[in-house]
Length: 172
Image (cartoon, rainbow, N blue to C red; front, side, top):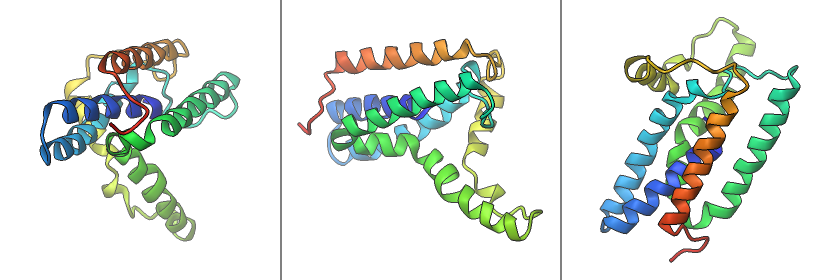
């Protein structure tokens, strides 16, 4: 799924943990559940328009990603201060795989194109395993453009849940 979806899930988790648990359990379980949430949220990403590779020649893909990146950035700007813990750990798998490991692996593969260095360190392998074991029954809609409607529905639902939980833009 997209960053905004992970952000919203992480915020919901942090609000619930901080509302119902005492220190240090609120911190520990926010980290744990936010991390685990990424595995499950990405596990069901096959029902959304979420192509494994960039489709830079497809105008629809480009427009959708401009919008989703903009909304994701906006969610970070709005919620990072009070909910940084839940947001970071809900995205830590992507941060590790996409922002840390892939650039290093890309440099190594420039020198040695057949290098397998780093393949075993990708955390998304866990997502793939969970998807294969738990979500095999879901329809695969990665390339179906109508799949954005499912992701929009999930984002709106999570936003409504945040409203009911009284998400604050300030540390309270």
